[in-house]
Every structure is written in structure tokens, then in C-alpha cells.
Image 1 (cartoon, rainbow, N blue to C red):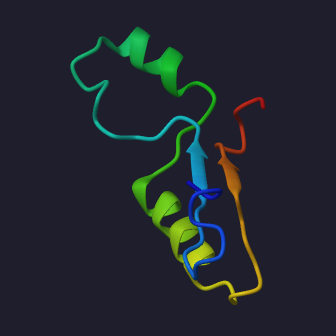
Image 2 (image 1 turned 180 degrees about the vertical axis):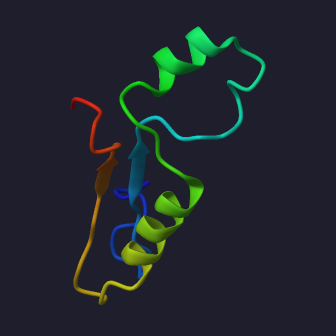
Length: 75
């Protein structure tokens, strides 16, 4: 999209989050949930904070990709 929108005032960023607590695993057993969340987990507010950070950048700044993982998750 960035290439297609080059020359316009539209900036395109991609956020790649690690494990996010979405409630998807609520029906799983404790052992399975503990395995998924063992590396830590992000909250939706963490993602929203990053979106806001990207939007608040001046027009001469582009953040094309942002990798966001819990501090305990290996990258």
C-alpha cells in the first residue's frame, strides 16, 4: 500500500503484535492457556498506545513496521 500511496499525504504503517490477551483462549484448559501466555501477554491498551504513537508523529516521520511483543517473549 505504501508504494501505491507514494506521493500522497497518506502514510501506511504495519503493527505486528505478539501474544495479545483477546479472550480467544478462555475455553482452553489451564495447562494450554499457561503455555500460550508463558512468554507474557499484551493488552489491547498496549496496541492502542502504539497506534496513537504512530498517529502523533510529524508528517516527515514514517514508521513502516512496528514489532510489539511482551517483554518476556523471546524475539
